[in-house]
Length: 209
Image 1 (tube, helix red, strand yellow):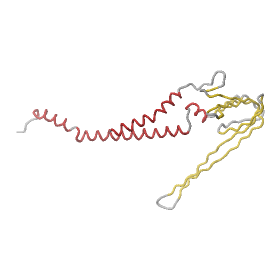
Image 2 (image 1 turned 90 degrees about the vertical axis):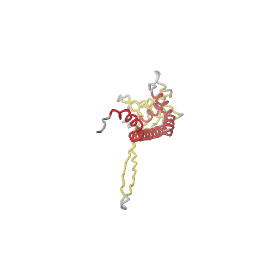
Image 3 (image 1 turned 120 degrees about the vertical axis):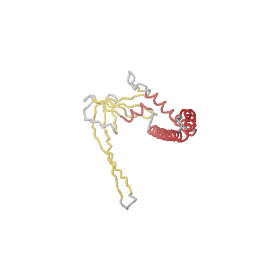
């Protein structure tokens, strides 16, 4: 039982960063009234008219081989992942600038008025939101929005998974320990109480002739 308590304490210590992130996640994710920052991260915008736009797709094929132990047969599972990249150029009062977005899946044509918004995180400008004023549409970078809201990255996600696995193991160990305790109580642990009850009940038992 001492080992279990120590294990739970370790899991609690590892959970501290998660609780800190939960506190951060409760902050309202709202852009400042002047539109220059969100959650303390500066925002940079560029507005212009689309002058040329094109989209390209890259397909990644992944093969996973499974070998059967009973024979030499091999089962190959093939998976495909399609990544779309949208490239366009804007011409506006700030000059001209080219953009290349992956994962936005925007539909742009020449002549449309667009505003591209970037947020600065860890010294790097990341695409955040694209406003298509002509079509009155908004396109969001969901992956980066998640990182801004959580303050995390793939490393934090792996950390959460590791902590959850530790918690599941601790819960499983706890359930086994409780089950073992109950079995022991039913088998031998309750015996002193049974003996005491029997000593009290013995005088009341009918005597055989």
